[in-house]
Length: 146
Image (cartoon, rainbow, N blue to C red; front, side, top):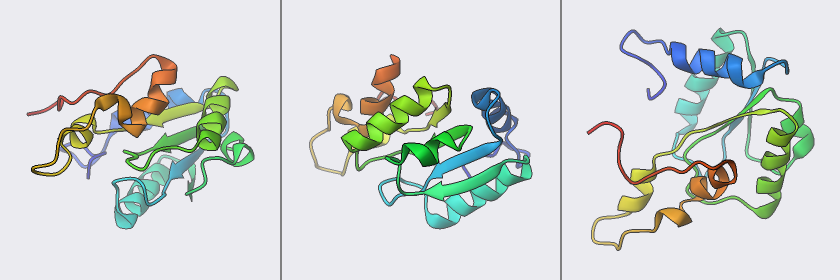
């Protein structure tokens, strides 16, 4: 899976969750909407891995519910291709402003490449960039590993 190293573990992910949660609850809200790339089985496997690190995990399709977000220490957003509603963006941004941790994971190159024969899609239209741009970050079309 994408979150495991060669030994079947991922110290970076576990440590990142600890750092991102700060002094908030050991609770992770994992985006599970149909707009992201991970399958239901992969999400379940990831949730179980995170539970193994002594976190509570809840999967959700509703990112616009600030009350739900506020109960988490960290929100994990996978490679969203379907975009975010303005209500979702507002809730996520408020969650982070209030001290919540956000782990936004994306594959910019997969957005840009689109389908064979189709024109390339501009990276500024990549939904993950529409979110992380609020924090001065951006995904690019270049894969990290080639």
